[in-house]
Amino acid sequence: MSDTTAPAVDLDGITKRFGDVVANDGVDLRVEPGSVHALVGENGAGKTTLMSVLYGLYDPDGGTIRIDGEERTFDSPRDAIDAGIGMVHQHFELVDPMTVIQNIILGQEPTQNGLVDEDSARSTIEEVCDRYGFDVDQHLDTRVEDLGVGVQQRVEIVKSLYRGADTLILDEPTAVLTPQEVDELFEVMEELTASGRSLIFITHKLEEAMAVADEITVLRDGKSVGTVAGDGTSEQELARMMVGRDVLFEGQERTTEPGDVILDVANLHVRDDRDLFQVEGVDLTVRSGEVLGIAGVDGNGQSELVEAITGLRSVESGTVTFEDEEISRMSRRKRIESGIAYIPEDRQEEGLVQDYDLVRNALLGNQTIEPFVDGPPNFLCLRFLKPVDAV
Image (tube, rainbow, N blue to C red):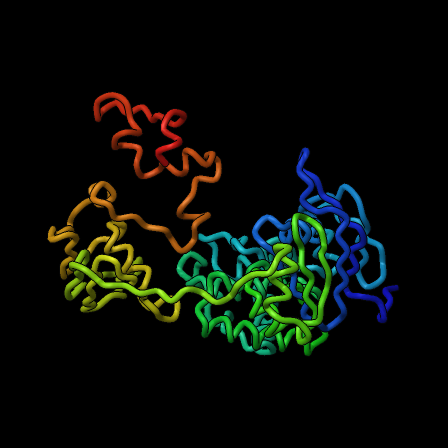
């Protein structure tokens, strides 16, 4: 029987090594029931590795895991889920071609007479959504690939709650959200803790950690530097704990003198994957030395607009002019060679080839132009090893 007075999660001396690299070095972490515990640190500090140990993705090389006072050993995420641990990864673990309801119940389908009882699943999911104010139940029969990033994240949270998570790990949950969606997420977190659930909030955004966390633990170089109260610290103190020195937060004011027009978009119309207009009559101009922001709630055409400009999506009507050349029908390859680059919203899924090393990934998109190729155009040989200093 679990101890109701014990911490919801108690990690004692957790160590995790990858070869000669010590990712977690004797880390302690205690999360109280019904609280939000933020885990902050620089990239590579060991935050996600520590939570992957708690979620059963990695076997620890040392240390003890206790859940509600009971010592546990997790050989897989299934063991962690059975113990009431859920995790929403920074890069969502969803099957894009499947519907929302299929993703939520995958691996834990209710059955009746040997068949999946979808009606029972729908009822349970709708109860979860009603309780916490999610709109996921409106999309149960929609394929995940047709949903915006913010809705996909809510699907992940509902999936964990459907599986009975008492402690929920949120790995950089605000990284892909608009400010409005961040506020909505924080309201959901408040509802979850009010119902007695515990949250571990991985982030590097100090102001967010201070806004929502009851306690904040700082990791640096795989070690726990300390734990402070969320309402009893400051960004300066947290930054000092993260990097080991004082950090200046006052940035230098940026001044610019915009030059000539580089990009001009006129009366642009673009359809989405459903063949519906997502961009209708958009005009914009970008000048040399200028940063142009495009804002809006996810799903309002920002992605389609950028894809049309960069050549990843066809233009229905209107024009895109780059450096005085009309490029609306120009191929993506020609646009790259002209100097138009694109960093996608989902870098892992759309921007990188995970099986390639850093050099190959850095050269992707430039593999058909000098100095990264040998031979005639019909037989290109990538010089992956020689021009590293040119990347």
